[in-house]
Amino acid sequence: MIRMIGAGTAEIDDPDAAVSEILDQLALEGALLDNSVGIVSCHSEFVETGMLRELCGRLPFDVVGCTALGSSVRGQYGVEFFSISVITSDDVSFSAAYSDPMAEDSMRGPLTGVYDRAKGALPGEPVLAIVFAPYLSTVGGEMTLSMLDEISAHIPLFGRLPSDHTLRYNDSMTFMNGESRSGALGLVLVSGNIKPRFFSGSISENKIQNQNGIITESDGCILRRVNGMPLMKYLTSQGLASGCIVRAFGSIPFLVDYNDGTTPVARAIYDITEEGYAVCGGLMPEGAALAIGSIDVGDILRTADDTLASAINSGGINGMFIFSSFVRCLMLGPDSDDEIKRTMDLIGRNTPYHFAYSGGEILPVYGMAGNTMNRFHNFSYAACVF
Image 1 (tube, one colour):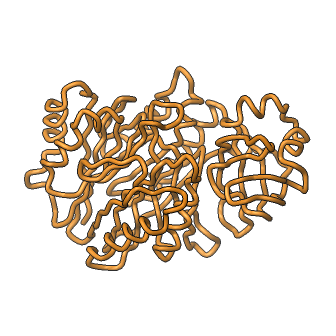
Image 2 (cartoon, rainbow, N blue to C red; image 1 turned 180 degrees about the horizontal axis):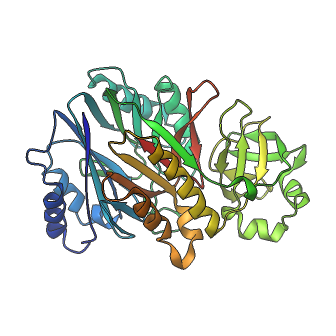
Image 3 (cartoon, rainbow, N blue to C red; image 1 turned 90 degrees about the vertical axis):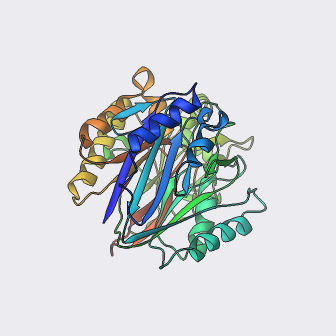
């Protein structure tokens, strides 16, 4: 048996009142089963005021998570909001660990260490990892994912990067049990009687150009040439004005098809270098097919509806986590809470859920044989159902 219990608060000014509100909503006495873990998404002020640390000190289980500018649980939501979901079970086990701070030239050691510590405390073989990866300005999210994927022997990885209220993610952080760091990774390994299912949506097919290019030169997350042409020349040949590319590169989604039978994944451009190369949110492998997409309000809501409907229709739901790209929220403009509202309306009152906006989504995709392969996503609405 597995159960999910949620609580949330918008009380950002009074830490004691916020803690009391969360504990009252959770009502944990008599509700916890043998094994439990807490997952938190919250505005950075809940960390800075000490509220998170105080709450963790009063909970009898590990708490892991990261910051979010916008989250929802139990029919409540907000931008400056605190959301916690407790997963508790008598036949599923959880083991949490927190890494040392990472940098571009020192990632493998902290990642190996955090995985080994979590696995060493788990009574069975892990079947799922819930990952809260840090935002590192010099390292794409997929570099962290790829390394953890190798270390974990390719078990399904689901999670996100933090989001916050600053332009450069200056206040983004991960945390565990009240301890917070800007460059560390929080990890929950899961074993036992659980069969997670994964769903995602990003760009509708009618919002993707029919003509695909082939990536002919790249270096990890750096995209240099497509169809043998310098990137900027290729993009202008596809009808994008060079000035538009420079001004609005963050809102141009690339769809990357690995040509291995998995669903194409969406990639965001994080920056344009002086040479005209694109620094992307995930790997841009040479030989992969590349399509340019567009994103608008109608498509954001449509892909959220379709993805969530697929998740709900899969049945047998004890709970679900939904992580949506913060770019989707920004593109909604003055109606920025529409996606959260639609999510709450579709889920209804009887299914426990945890929604948070993300700086990048970590989600497995399915191959033709039904096997999973871990991918890093941008622009995506990603769900894990269990």
